[in-house]
Image (tube, rainbow, N blue to C red; front, side):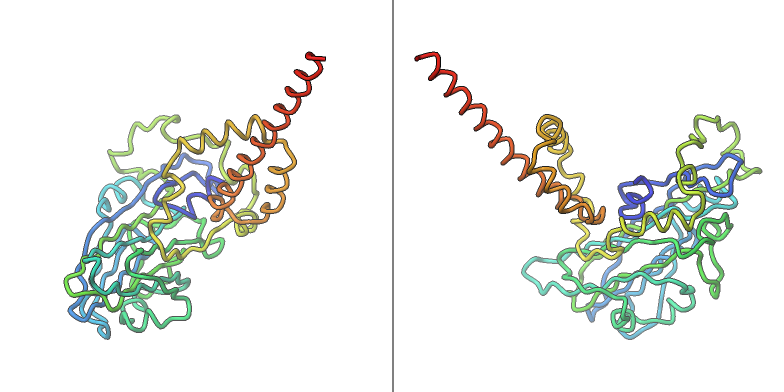
Length: 330
């Protein structure tokens, strides 16, 4: 579940040790970039993300039909390349929000996930061609959007220099790439984006910044995915059914699960007291096949069922008390 959570929401759930094909200690890192661009005068823009700390984000705000892109590294790329020489991508994603007056036309957003695409292929596309791709999903500009990076095959779990040092322009990355493009936004709209790439790698043997790491800092090797699934293929087969849609046309919804942790604790207490009744068990069995991305809606339904069950149980006790008082009076 830790791996599923990181794939579904890499912004809230960071990297973890995957454990495959390593016996030497590994370290965990998160490459990130947060910045803003302004839409073109025609209301268009495009942002893409590759699975590497170097050449991580590509932006295009030169016009809907242009292929002029600017490439940016992760903000902490120096720390990442100091920390590791070879690494693999655990999870990653790109999300953005568009800032404009609420009285203005909202514009539309398109987002998608791309496998087996080179940086050259991305920069050959204009915002108009990206939004026309079959994998692009449509959403309102007022809601924001997010797209997640996934592994492609077993090579995604091997250690490479490219996730830190960057892929050459014509090389296929070992994980998917993502894009978000917009059209029809008001002039002057500011687009704030965040890109996150969670990595696991070998410590750089010639870097002084990684010397002296203790075993406790390097983590526990007995609770990795490799401890439970012998191969990456087995892991991918296990998590496939628990993954939510990698493209979410509502960036606010992505973090909604953490909006009220106290409510979750309270509901857990109620479940502990009343979690074995007929209603709650029926609700769980009816929704057992839903994926992890729908868990919040499942919990909402369960909470409603739990409340009704609490009322039902309370009614039973009240009726018992009434009968007991009636017998006492007789």
